[in-house]
Image 1: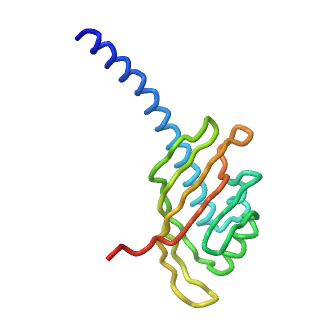
Image 2 (image 1 turned 180 degrees about the horizontal axis):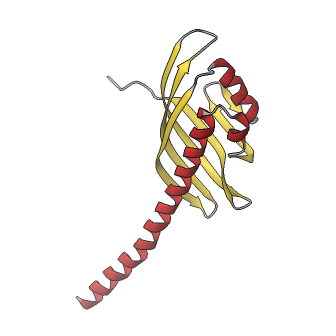
Length: 150
């Protein structure tokens, strides 16, 4: 019985630091999500581009973008009043300097090309890497949230 209690205490003790690390990872991702939202809502393509790693990709239904500043300039011309609300829901450590996350986002505004009001619920996934000691977005994928199954 004493041996089992010892093993239990060891396992609990080993699990506690992992939870602290998970919380720190989630905080780092949350900071990036907030920075992304702030730059998006200010319509700052250069600020958004700085959040991405040197070798990055943004994947959406429009294809793959590797020049984020140019991509966001075009997006903000089409929707000059665009607003974003996003949050990370799950975060996983893949390697010491690699983190993956999944979340939701809502994009609202008016498309000046079509005149249509935009109110999109989206799902996103991201891979973050440490580049020169700073967390950056390596790959971001965003899709429209599918309607509920009938």
